[in-house]
Image 1 (cartoon, rainbow over the protein chains, first blue to last red):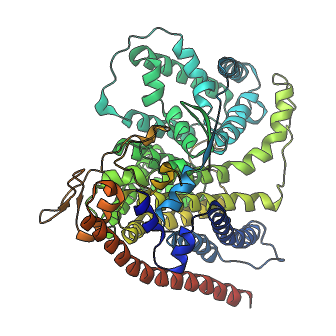
Image 2 (image 1 turned 180 degrees about the horizontal axis):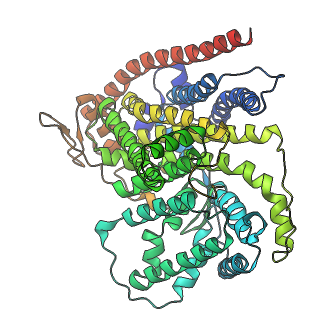
Image 3 (image 1 turned 60 degrees about the horizontal axis):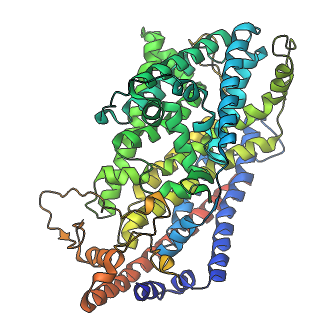
Length: 488
Length: 114
C-alpha cells in the first residue's frame, strides 16, 4: 500500500511534486496558498459587484456604472474560473486530506437535549398564541416576525453555518413523539417523493397566500402542520415520519451536511464547511437527488416571483384569459421540471465526457449534494438584509407582543456592504459547490483527466445558475401581481 | 505515515476500514449501465466495468493495489504516468482559459471605464 502511495506521490510535473510533498508543513502551506488563490476572485468580484449593486439601486454617480450583462457574466466567469483552478488539483491524497480533516468532541448531555425540546415546544405554543391574540397587522405581530425573521432568516441559516439542531428543537417532533403510534410499515417505493411533494407544497402556500402578512393564517398553518405531523407519526411512527417524510426535517438535515458541526456516534464532529457533501450516502436515489434540486429551486422561485420579469409575464398570460392561480402553479411546476431536467442533462454530460459506464443516477447521487452549498449561499443572500433590517422590529415587538408599538422601528437604509456580503456569499456558495463536485468526481472516476472532464456539465449548470441567481438578488423587488398581500 | 493516511487516495480500499465514520464501510463499486455495443473491461475483484484499458489499469491500482501481481502493478504505474501527459496538456489549456477570462474581463472593464 505504502509503495503505491509513494508512487502516486512521485508523479511528473513540478506542480504535481509540490502537491505530493510529504511533510505536514508543506501540505499546510499549500492549503493556505490554495485558500489565498481562491480568495482573489472573491475579492475582485466583491468590489465589482458591490459597485454594480450600488449603482443599480441608486443610480449613483460616484461609481462606474456597470451594465447588468457584464456584472452577471463576471459572476459566471468567477465560477468558471474556480472550476479551472480546481482542475489543477489532481492529487487524490490531497483532496482526501482536506475532506478528512476534523476533530471530535463529546456530545452535549441529555439535559441539554431535553431543555432544547422544551424550548422548541414553548416557542411554538407562544407563536401560535400570539398569532391569534396579538395585533392582526403582520409587521406588528411577533408571531410573523418570529417565524419569518428569526426562524426562517436566522435559525435556518444556523443549520448550515453551525450545525443541524432541528432534530432536538423540532417542536412538531417533540409533540408527535408523545402520541402512541400504530407503527405501520412505510412503503419503501415512496422514498423521499412525499417529502419532495411536501416541500413544493409548503413553498407554494408561502408564495400564494399572505402567510407573511396574516398572523391568524400563520398560526392556523402552524397548527395544521402540527396536526399533519402527529397524524403521520401515529401511522408510521415519529422516527420514520421525521426521518423520511417531513420536508422540513429533511431540508435541515441536508443543510446540516454542509455545516461545520455534526452529531455522529462518537460525539460532535468538527469539519471544514461543505466537505461532508462529497460523502457517499448524502443522497440515495433519484427522489433524494430531486429533493436537493427542489431545495435550490424553491428559493429561486420565491425570489423570481418578486421580479419585474415575472410580473410582466404573469400579467400578459392572465390578460389572455388564464386564471392567475393556474399561471402561478403551472409555472412553478414547470420551473421545477426544467431545473431537474437540466441537472439530469448535466449528468448525461458527465457520463459522456467522463468516459464512464457509471449510471446517471449513481453520478447524480454524488453530484447533487454540491448544489446544497449553492442553496445555502443563496439562502443567506436572500435573507441577510431582511434579517438585519427587521431586527429592531423583532426587539421592539418582542418586548411587548400583545401591545406592540404602532410603527415598529426598522433599519431604513442598510449600509452598502450588506449587499456586498450577500453577493459574496452567493459566489462563495458556488465556489464550495465547484470544489465538492471536483472531490466527488475524484472519488467516482479512476482517471484524473476523466474526473475533470466529467464536471463540464455541472459546471455549466452552476455558471448559468450563478447568473440567474445574481440577477434575481440584485433586481429591485416588486410585489407579485394577483396575490393580494404580496410576499415578504 | 500511518496506514490510514497511506490509504487516503480518495477512494475506498479493499482492506478493512477503521470504522470511525459511517461512510467508511467498504463501498460497492458504483452501478454501471452499458451501451448496446460496449466491450467493457471488467474488474475481477469487484465487477466494476470500465470502457478503456487505461481506466481499468488505474482502477485496479487505486482500488485493489494490494492484490495485484508485479506485472499489474507495473501496468498501473505506466497508465498513471501516461495520464500525466494528457493532464499536462489539459493544464496548459486550463491556464490559457484562466488568462483569457482574466484579461478578457480586465479589458472589458477598462473599455467601460474609459
